Image (cartoon, rainbow, N blue to C red; front, side, top):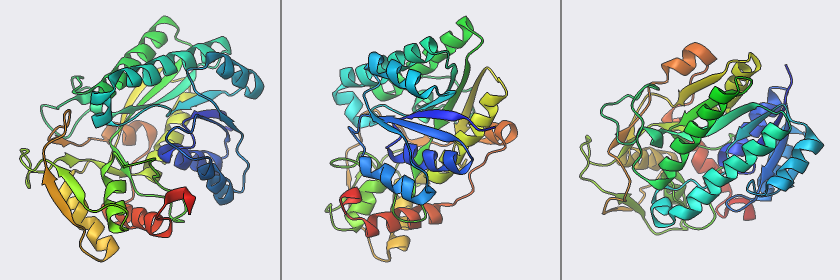
Length: 339
């Protein structure tokens, strides 16, 4: 069934790839983004890839009045909510900005949704809500705790959405706990395009490979892992985007409140990622070991069995494909969307 979906943060890395998958699945899409950490040109690429014009509103979700107007104008049937600040390290330095953007922004969005009787939301949560897990792989019913302000905003928002559902069972809420999205669109024309120095590993590695940055900083080699560097569950952004389309199908059935891990179920260390990128690039990538970052943990990877059983979704693209696609994007567009 075709839906009209409002996508907040829809000009960003995961947002744009999800917009493509939604359009290709037959849905109408409206994008709201304040372009603080994204670029309007990314949506031009989306329109070129899909052949569909995407209505776009440059707006901050903390501006409830503007959101109300957008909801009245567009009348979406559901929301996929990506908008927010998203860097662990940065959140430890400027926590207030994270609480303001992520929590106040989402409350503003939920008010506008409720006033316009739009009670279907897929929320971009994070594996950071598991904190430092007592064991891996991680299941959805593991204890929740957080080690940094970014993770705390995600956990608080999960609790807010749970409270809303408990108060009003007309809401349908899907909490998607992402692991580490990397890769890029197969065209090489759409990928992660951070403003300034990248906070995430893969764009940092690709920018070193393309000569924009001098070397990769590996934050700590004294973790309790095989090679001493942090282990994460890296998932191709296209697989992650398809997970949102699958979650939308769940919401259409009036499913209430549901939580899913979206990951591959495999963990790779920082050094393994660098090695895989070296294969994609065809030459060594310089790196140096530096101190651990505050808030980082040793290992974090998913058990995605619940998403497979209930959503019919599983990750299909492997680490080789992730690295090759990320490199195709970066090598074609060394300066991101400015090229």
